[in-house]
Length: 52
Image (cartoon, rainbow, N blue to C red; front, top):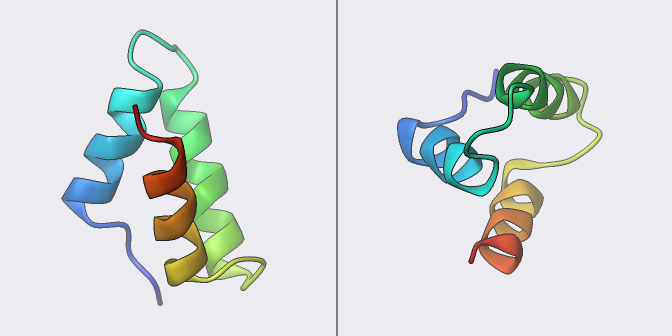
């Protein structure tokens, strides 16, 4: 089982601050990881590429 770290959730929160759908977004990311649609490394790469 892959678990999002506090740092990963905080980065997602920073990217989506003020968005009421943060919880839904985190859930969808978790489900994508859990279903192996994407890997942890791909998720981290996406976060680094899209952070401000």
